Image (cartoon, rainbow over all chains, first blue to last red; front, side, top):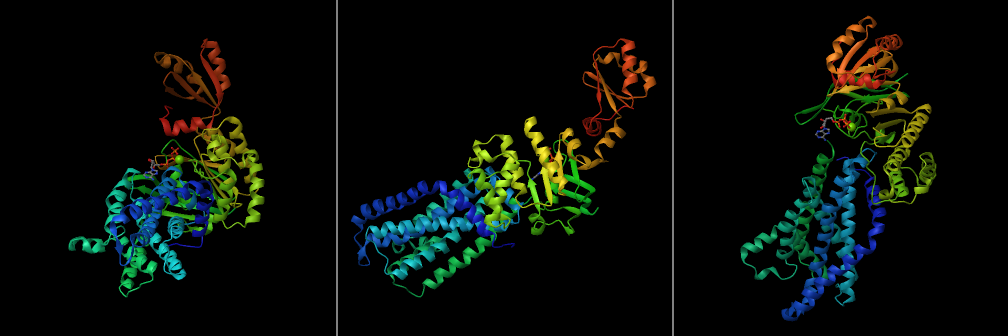
Length: 255
Length: 305
Ligand SMILES: Nc1ncnc2c1ncn2[C@@H]1O[C@H](COP(=O)(O)OP(=O)(O)OP(=O)(O)O)[C@@H](O)[C@H]1O
Ligand SMILES: [Mg+2]
């Protein structure tokens, strides 16, 4: 792994180019959570009654927070990276400079994490404005930290997909067969305990499940020791995914 | 003069395809070295190994004292690359393209700004400073690539077909700029399909074909050795070849039939011309021999001597 501080320069390049897209992406980042909170939260919440003594929205918000991080960082490393690699040949120019292929890919992962963090925080802001408050200030800060870990995980996983993708169409397999089901089977919208046993087992193999559990605990401030295991799952998975993602991208970039 | 690049039996394979097939050459400091060859000859593949973005499959390649390797940051830091394909950052403006690239080379912001202003002037793009890349013509994009390659004050410039698709003005501007850099002691590695470009810029060239080097030398000498001084083209039906060759046999020129034209390659075209006038042949043309003739002879088809 030939990584260096130049990751930051690649991040900076993305920031410079982002200037032009700030308004539309902020709007998307705001409208998406609003859509979820209104349709699921307020619409369905009316029928859901209380969850552990609190309105449904308190259940929903922490899950939607991490899934919006998952979505943004995934899409950035799928479509964003693919365009830069194939259509703009940006990586080719980069590796002819002192920036290594590893720096370039890691820089893009860092960027995707940032995008995830922006989406997640905007979501949190909307929730707060709607009166759905995290347990404490510490909770909000820990949530931001969690978003970074979740972002690294899903950005790296997406990098692996991008590294073997022949075209845009390929991404549909990943988003439709893995990401979307994950959204529904990770306990974001409803609790897992009413699912049959095999489904619960399955959901444990979905990284988002663990992120949602942590997020919900941090949001309410009600921790339990099992969370350490959830966190370890995320940490180990993302280290592996980061390593493999960079290796596989490098193999694709250097011919 | 010291050697900057030295290749011994250099090989590059892409799967089962051998793109570079055991070539050896040396490039001296402060010279312009050209790789000539038709499409697919292996020029780009060779120079990409030299500037360390593509791993070597076999043989040795030493660049600036170190084996060429993908992690050779020191070499990349002192090298400017003008890629064959226009690879600019379409999301950014002209200025942003340059400032972002300056970061990659650790150039401090203030110095970068000064350098960008100079370079935009150097390639005559000051008026386009804040344009998006889409709004540039191909020639402007190529000039921007030149400016980008010069940001780090390179000691070595690798220019892969830098004037493809340009009009004569733009082409001459780029040639001038490259000559200017060479006069400042920069080593220039050029690939091209334009023979004129090689003659204008290169001290030494190699002619590549199917991954191998066919000939190496100084452009003007190569022309003289391989072809002679002049080429006489006669457009006559094929049936008359034998008669004409017979009539002109005393001039000991090489000749070749390609399509509708019979070519004579001569040391002394004048004598041949006079004889042709005597023979009352029309449809002929005499011109100085160029590298293109060498190129076609070596890579196109065998010459009948
Ligand atoms: N990344 C790659 N994967 C597989 N084959 C490749 C790759 N790059 C080049 N080749 C093959 O290697 C050979 C040499 O290609 P190269 O690009 O070096 O030629 P070139 O002399 O630069 O040609 P041109 O004048 O068209 O630019 C070609 O047969 C090409 O198809
Ligand atoms: Mg080429």
